[in-house]
Length: 302
Length: 283
Image 1 (cartoon, each protein chain N blue to C red):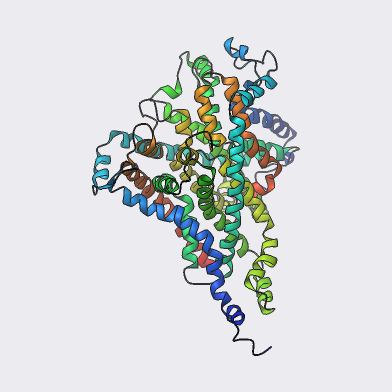
Image 2 (cartoon, helix red, strand yellow):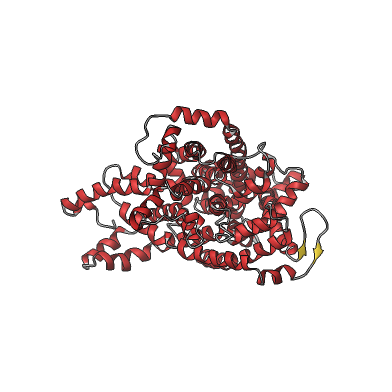
């Protein structure tokens, strides 16, 4: 029992704590490397080329980026992305309001909560179709409402002035539900003693909420902001389903414009598409870094 | 509890609350209720301009039968299952291994690796699009279910690993230490001690990944072209192009496509919410 060390099995059992993590990680890390990490680098590389996806790649340096600077469609997409980002963030306070409203214990409240959450579970394609129908001129419920209020017909999705807002409203529907569920969980976990203590000190309503409840909801707020920002920058499905970027490209966002340039019937400009994707990636990276820094700080404290 | 329970307020407020609740719910779900109603409308209603009134009759059976009979939606649904189920198994399986490695062992670069998984989660799909499509083409997997599954497994592994690692970190480490003292091999520690404790995490992730992958539309348009491998999200969108203004069919198709994740959510609600709200409570 003492002299078992020299056998191969002994070698393994001695070193297994050294090698085990490598073996456990290998399959997942390899897949992630091939399909996620490497493609980021490849996209950056492709963005310096002129490429139709089939033939040889031609190096054009910063050519694609220079072209972007003079591309009106790019600016429209960028502007729409900014509008998306700002308006989409309304989902956070709206979700909080919904959560505060639903954080009660009346009969059947659980079913209400899940039904309020419903829109998030549905595919964005379905959400897009539902809202297209909702906005449809002549017979859509929303159009009918506008008509009865203002007396004029508005075809939201065919009007350059309103189209982006119309799509964002559709996107807000599931996103508010998502933020609501995050806050409901957060509210469930706040410290009741602190709230009671606050009430003792005759803090009421707004000031109780602002000084005692909201600070305790910070983790929920943080996650809600992160997922909402990412959702806003990723908005592709709704634009594709509801308008395909139209009318006249006025509802394009970067993610859709990139797809259009690289893959749709307008041609296979992989290099140019990759350059748009890189811009989107850089914007996203700002937020990812912000998120990671916070996580690293937490890990240090843990 | 915040806000103050309505029961403690005046009976008027309590009553008002209970009346307001269903009203707001109906308004909130109005688009959905509209679609559900439309899906059982006789097509004559739409022609007569009756879009929002009571349906003149029940044509649910007819509409849904016609959706399944006259369109490949049944096939699309089957494809969605063929894509979603293997992805869930693959991603959850791989992330159990990765999460275990990152939570239990201390080695150089472990934190870095963890953050790579986390960051990978948030990058825009578009930056992966061209190379992943190219890779899939080169492997001969373009326009196949396998091609989609491989990508989804890889991508979802990032999120799942984040989840699993944090979950395992929360388990009592003393259990593992004790087993090591007993001379139990690392694999057996994983298989017989940690894995059984991970059941709630596995359930939560499975439900969540099922929904994410079922609802994916972007990759279905990038990696699939024809009907052969098309999942129901992309299929529904192309059917929408064919059923011009046949809103009773579009509605029925939408309901069919939305049903599996909705059922999944209702039956596994607790797990679903546990998965989704990870991180919203602590930290």
